[in-house]
Amino acid sequence: MGAVSRRSLLGFVAVATFLLAAAGVAGVLFIGDGRGDPPPQLRTLDLASCRDLQGEEARSCFAQRFLTVLDGRDDPRPGVQAISDLAWGEGGFLLTNCHVIMHTVGRRYARDAGVALANLMEHLPLGNDPGCSAGFAHGLVTGVAPDLDPSHPAESASVCAEAGTRWQRYSCVHGFGHAFMRLYGDQLEPALELCVELGADTAPDCAQGAYHDYWLAVIGADGATLRDRPVTDPRRLCGAQPEAFVRPCWYRAFLETRPDGFQIEAPRDLEDLCDGLEGVQREGCITGAAVIGPPDPSAQLEICAALPVAADAASCVRGTKVQNLLKEPPESYVSLIEGCDRFSAIARRACYRWLGKAIAVVTDGRFERTGCPRLSSDAARLCVEGARTIDEALVTFS
Image (cartoon, rainbow, N blue to C red; front, side, top):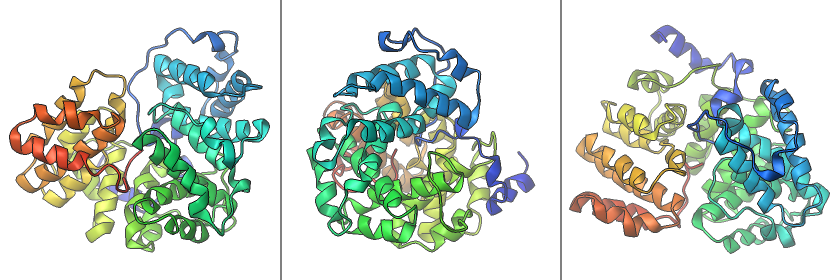
């Protein structure tokens, strides 16, 4: 892609040309394109007809089929796991789109099964899968939005503390960001005010859910709609946000609005997308741009390491799709974080800290004990420092 066409992305005048299937609406572009055998609960479903469709029609078709798997079940989690297993085995469109498909499934299941805030935690998936399972969790939380008391948002969101892992607590809080948006017809200002009430260590993660819902509404996906004419240029939208919410705003912006087929392939692509921005706005833009890079997190790091400005390289690392290694052996995480050695000194330290944190979240804290010690002494120290901050706001995470 030439420089002129890359720069033309900055205005985002072609929002209507988005392609969610390529965008990876879960914040992750998953690896895999094989088609495995479906789990037993799904073998009788007519999924072939869904595979013959494209875009929103295909997503709607899969959602309808998957709802029948969960219909009448008091505990939806085995069915959600079966759907997740199917998606990981099949790869391609289904895996890439499963997160947003399961948003719909989760919302409708919550409505049909009478899920309320009081019993929400009895239905949330227990795994760390950022695709199907996380999408279902976000849909469930959004589905109980009518049950929320906007005058006491922190009391409502306190149920997230009952989740078993840091990643699940994050996903729950992110879901409340979606729910707060639906309470107010996808109006950002009142939804973000509720996020602020959750406290400094939680508000940015709630806000990312709110911005995620906003960007979905911009493109008319996931049943999200905006009352007023939307701001579709992330420079305008994120430039007007409170500093603590700038990174969450940018994190989802390119995922949901990039033109068909565009992917970051070289450092110049990130520099062009974020040309002219400074400070936290540039930091957020670089991170958001990195998310639409290669699906292989190691390839992402190579691009980040080649950025000539250390601050840009450090921001780029925050967009690394660590979750794509979820099905890989533990050694893959060590191999990934060793890629921080390619960076200049300042960015290298930021790289080890961020990946130490992100991998610790994905592995339920195990990486601090089993992965960080396998690095060289200074790298191990930085890795542990990052891992020990997982209870702070994640801000840029999927």
